[in-house]
Image (tube, rainbow over all chains, first blue to last red):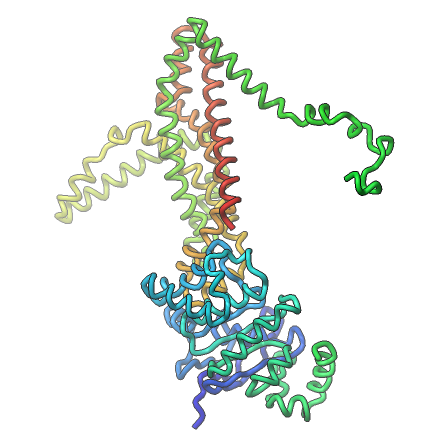
Length: 248
Length: 293
C-alpha cells in the first residue's frame, strides 16, 4: 500500500467568477518529488497554496499525513508548522537578521529555547551553504542567498513536506543554480517536495513525477522520462515546445 | 566633471538662476526661517530677562509647564494604547470588533476637539461614574460588598479635572493614531503575513513578531508629528481650568491686564517645545534609518 503523505480529492477554488481550480485530485507519496508545470494562470500556485490552506479551498478535501485539513485555526497552525513553504519573492522578514529569521518560528511556534533554536539555525544555514551570513540583514544578501535563507528558515521547523512556489523565477540567471543545488540535495535526502517550477534541468534530475496543469485541471500526470520523450497530450507538447525553447 | 566636457554645460547654456556664483546658491538654500525663529527666541529670552513685566509673566507661566508636559505625555501614552487597539480593530475580520473600532474613529473625527473635551470631561466621565456606582450597588445587592462597596463609593469629585483632561485628549488622539497604525499595518505586504503563517504562526503571532515591528517603524514619523500636535492641543485643557501654561497665562493676563507679556511668553514657550521636539524626532528618525533595515 502506498504511503501517501498528501492526498487531494476533487479540489475546487474559485476567486469570485474566476475558477482557479476545477476539481484536482492528486496523491503525493512520502519522500517523492512532484514538479508542477503549466502556463501562467493554470492554477499551479493556487494548488500549492491550498495544500497548506494559505488559500481556503471552495470545496474538496486535503489530507496531510492521514489528517483532513479543516478551517480550525489551531489545527491549521499545527499542520502548517509541518509544511515548509518557499516563495517566489523569498518573503524574508526584513527587520530581522538571518539568524533571527531562522529562529523566530522555532521559538514562538515550536517553543524551542533560544540556544537550541540557534544551534538548529546554524545547522540549516550550513546545509544551504551560507553560515557566514547569520548576522546579516536580508537586504545585504543577493537574491540567491535570500532564497537559500528562506529554505533554511522552512527547514529549521523540521517539516515533513516542502512546497516551492516558483523558487527561482525572481532570481538573476547566475543565482538560479545555487538554489537548485540546495533543492537537489534536499530531494536526495528524501524530503517530500512539491515544486512549481519550469526548471527542466531540476525536473529531469530530481522529479519522481511531473504534473501539467491547464485551466485549473491536471492535464497530464507522468514521469520526467515520458514527459520529454513521449508526451501523451497535444496540450503538453505545445507547452513543452514553448518552455524548452527558452530553458534548454 | 571637468573630464566630461559634454556633461558640464557652458555658462551661457545654464538657466539664469543657476548661473549665480556658488555663494549666492548657498545663501538661497540657507534655512532663513530657522535663523529667524532662533533670533525671535533669543530676542524674547533677552526681553524676559531684562524687562520686569516680562520676567514676572514668565515666572508665573512657567509654573504650568509641568502640568503641560505631564498631560501631553500621559495622554499620548494612553492614546497609543487606544490607537493600537482601535487600529487592530479596524483591520480585524471580526465584524463586532471592526464596527466598534470604526464607530469610535468616525465619531471622534466628526466632532471638534474642543467640544469633545467638554463632552468627555463633563458628560462622559459622570456617566461612567454613574454606571460604576450602579454596578457597585448591584454587587452590594448580590452580597459582594467588598468590591461593591468600593465601586458604589466612587464619586465625580474623585475624578479630578486633570484626569478628565488626560482622558479626553487620549480618547481623541486614540482615534487619530488608530488610522496611523491601520495605514502602517496595511503598508506591509501580504507576503510577510503569508510567510509567517506558513511557518505555523497564529494570526496574533504573525502580527506581533512580523507585521507590527515593521509597521511601527514605517509610521514613526507620523507618530512623532502627532506627539508634537498633542503638545499644542494640550492647551485645550485650559477650558477645564487645568493649570497648564495656557491656563496660567490666561489667569495672569486676566488679573494684571498684561495681555501682551502673557501671550508673547506663552507662544514662545510652545514654540520652543515644538521646535525642540521636531528636531529630536528628526534625529531619532535619521538614526533609525541608518540602523534599521
